[in-house]
Every structure is written in C-alpha cells, then in structure tokens.
Image (tube, rainbow, N blue to C red; front, side, top):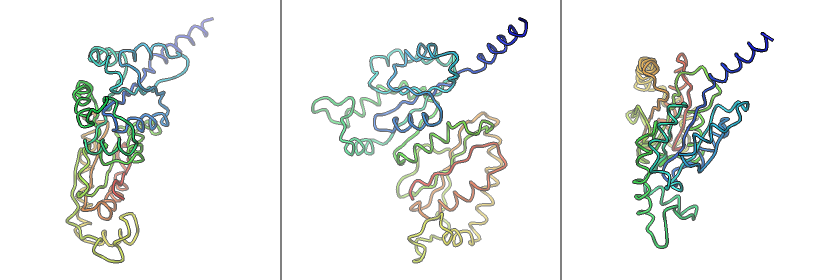
Amino acid sequence: MEDNHASRIRYRISCMKLKPTIVIITGLSGSGKTVALRALEDSSFFCVDNLPVTLINLFVSRLPKKGNITKICVGIDIREQAFLSKIDSALLLLKKKYRTEIVFLEAEKGVIVRRFKETRRPHPLSSGNADIDQSIEKEKDMLLPLRKEADRIIDTSSYTPHQLRHLITSLYSNTKKSKAMALTFISFGYKFGVPQNIDLLFDVRFIPNPNFIPELKELRGIDQPVKKFIFEKPQTKEFIKRLKGLLDFLIPLYIKEGKAYLTVGIGCTGGRHRSPAITEKIAALIKKHPVEISAIHRDI
C-alpha cells in the first residue's frame, strides 16, 4: 500500500513539473500563419487554429491529463475580432498559469497584396469593393494589442514558405533539449532588402565578388569553386577570424542574459555567392556553445 501511495505521489509531482508550453501564432493575414502552424505541428506541438484567445485557458484545462500533451500551439487571427477586446486579461491569465510565448508574423503591404492576388483569396476584412490596402491597415490597427504583447515579431516579406517553415522549426524543434539558445544564420542580398528579424547584421560586400568571374557567375556560394575563390582571399580569412571571435564573446553573454533566439544576418550584393559561403563557414565554426544552429540562404 505504501509503495502504491508513493507511486501516486511521484506521478502527481511529475505532472506538476510538466507545465504546458503554449505558443500563440498570430499576425497579419497573408503573413504565413498557416505555414508556421504546420511547422509546429510537425515539431510535435498539439495545434488548433482559429481559437478565441478567451477560450485558450478552458481548452488547455480540458486536455486529457494522461495524454502527456505539454506543447500546445494556438492560431489566432482577425476572424476572432469579437474577442480581441478581452485579449489583455486573457493573456495575463495564460502567462500566470503556463509558459506562454506569442509569435507575431507580419509582412510588407506590397508583399501581402501580391500573396492575396496569387492565391485569389479575399482579405478577411474585405467586403464588397473595399480596397485591400485599407483592409490591411485596418487589420494592423486591430491586431496592435497582440503585436505589443508579442515575444517575437517575424517579418516574412523575404521568406519563401520553405524558409519560414525552416525558421519556425529551428526555433521550436525539441530534438536537442540541452541547447540553451537557437542561433540562426541568414544569408541574403542587399538588393532584395535586409531581413527584418535579425539581431546582428554583417556586410561582406568588401570581399571580391565571384559574380564577375565568368566560370563562377552561375555557381552558388555553397559550391566548392566559389568557396575556394572566396576563402583564399586574405581579407576573408581575417574577417572569419574576427567574426568568430566576436560571436565566441557574445554568445555566452546572450545565453547568460536569457536570450532564447539569436538571428545573424550576413549580406552581400545579390545573396548568391559571398554571403552564403561566409554563412556556411561561420555556422560550422560555432560548435563549442550550447546552441541549436541553423543556416538559411534566402536568395539562392
């Protein structure tokens, strides 16, 4: 009897420790919320879309106690506008009871307009002959309280669905629980715009450009001939040495400060040669820290 009683106590204690983690995916229509939800679903999150924020607490409390569901993702969008007025109190209650993180996705207006035209779907706030630009601005105003509460704001303007999926997976995948921080490197081309969600930015346009070498022009920075051309340059060697030293210095400080995610952008003119090569190289060198490393090449 005593053994059974002790077993029940241990079970209750273990259940108390398994405090659910709730990730709320929200943001502007056309910014990639569906892609993010599916990425989290594939990362072993229990996902539900279009759930009013005021019902999240009730929903979590009704989940099976023995189902071992500890990772929950909830999608919230403008379709729940009737509940947005109560969002502050609802979020306060959630954050008191659970580990709660809000991810707000957004994109430039022109990008959102293009995405709606490509999918031929109406904006949720469009009615009759309402202009889509007006609908986007109205949605921004209505979702402003959620954006202010967001723990992470991601601009998806320059991301393909595959790249966004990779980013979300790298941030929330639980395959390596011992890692203290998610470190993402993004290569990009300045002529296509600077990614909006980066923490550290490095410009490598000072390195000789392989684009002007005929036999290298059509290759990419991840191809061996291009890497050989780039890394034989003395300025590249010195830059890699100094960048590695800087990151070796900064990463432990960010971890100590409690930063969960660090995104490093490395850009060149077109994002095809120099920045991908540098990104791959530096990502391979940062190994001694307890970080989950991923690399995204936006423009190749």
